[in-house]
Image (cartoon, helix red, strand yellow):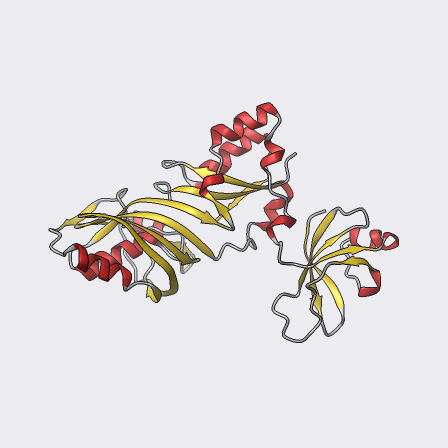
Length: 304
């Protein structure tokens, strides 16, 4: 039974669910999940949680992500990438300088309309399900932020750029918006996620590599521990006589603490009231939240 986080390289042609399904067969365990879905056409970093770490899937700090994308100008599709049906082809009359200026203008925050082919729900139904029925519904723009946008190569009608953006940003829709502003339309031709949740594509493992490591008994070396995902949180070690208290998932007070690292702040407005809790032997037990009013540490996520 494996427990931890894997930095998997999702190859094009697989859905994120496909990767999880294949890993269940490779690792011979069912408790596997992922965070930060990638489109089937896209490739790159897919963070996979295994065993006890599946409890992290909804709380991992994955707000900022980095991608390398290829924009194809002069082509619009119903999916906003090259997997869909072409709706229109247009001549690209803009100069390289004009293309550069328009792309750079998207740095910062703007209201982005999500694509129809997405998992966003409207009235309880996913947009891609409606899209497959031939329906197009109005989508409310959502605030997203482009922190960095670097053009790596321009060979019109193609533009390769690297982007660092907030969670919830659709690169397909960004390509669509750039094309619309240039007056020729555009779609995403290729996408590689270079980083997410602090993991880099350079350290990602393909499914074939993971399978070989399992056979050789080396996979444990590539699993990232649950507590390593939160190096910014202070660490608390419970005094030996109070081990049973936290084993049962109970809240505790400062008098139950054996050791504590620096960084804990007991003050109003503390932006990071979470701590990592360990038993007296140094075994990680869970993430606790400190409640200033009651001066108690209350379980947030337990990993017993």
